[in-house]
Image (cartoon, rainbow over all chains, first blue to last red; front, top):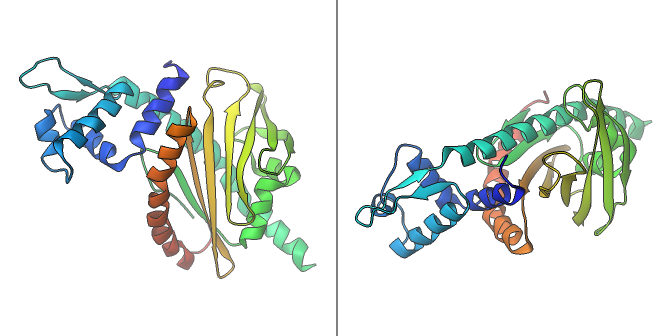
Length: 112
Length: 155
C-alpha cells in the first residue's frame, strides 16, 4: 500500500482539470511534452509545470530520453486512487440510501 | 435519485424530498447521524458530535464479521442548512494516517434539497486550499447539473 502522503499527493494532483485532461490523454498511450501540450490552451512552460506535479505525485513517469522525453501513466498509482474512490463511494452511498426513510420520519414529526 | 458526477474524485450528488434544515439534522445530531451512517452490513452503535467550528466528532461502525471501527474528525466550517466542512479519519487500520476533508453543500428549492458531497485526502493547508479552488468552480457546474434533479421524483 502506498504511504498516505502519496494518496494525498495524487488527489491533489488530480484536483486540477488540466492535469485530469493530461492523465486522460496519457491513458491512450505515452506522449511527449509537445504532443500533450498541442491541444491544450496553455503555454508549454505551464504544461511542464503540470507534468512536474503529476510526476511528483507518482501518477506519471517521464523517460530520461533527452530527445523525446515521453511521459507515461503510472498505472499502480491510479489504481490506488480508483480503489480509494470505490471504497468510499460504496461507504457513503449505502448511508445516503438510508436517509430518505429517516427524513420521512422527521417530516411526520414536524407536522404532528 | 443519485449520480456520481466525477469518476476521478469522490463527488456524490443526491436529491432528497425534504427541506435542507431536516437534512442538516442528519449530519449534526448524533442520534440521527448514527441511524444512517455505515456501509452495507454495518450499524453505527455510537456517535458523539460537538457541533461547532473546531469541535470534534467520533463514531463507530460495527459488523459481525469485522467488529468495530472508530473514526472521527473536526468541524472546519459550519453554515447551518447550507454548508458543512469537516475532517474525516479512521482511528486504526491501514488508512489511519490518511486525513480527508469532507465538504457538503445543501441547495434547497421548492422543499427539495440537493446534497453535494465531496471527499478527498489532503495533507497540508496549502494543498487543501489549492484543492478547494480546484473544485469550488466544479461545484458551480454541479449546481447547474443538480438543478436538473428538481424535476425528478425521489428514489
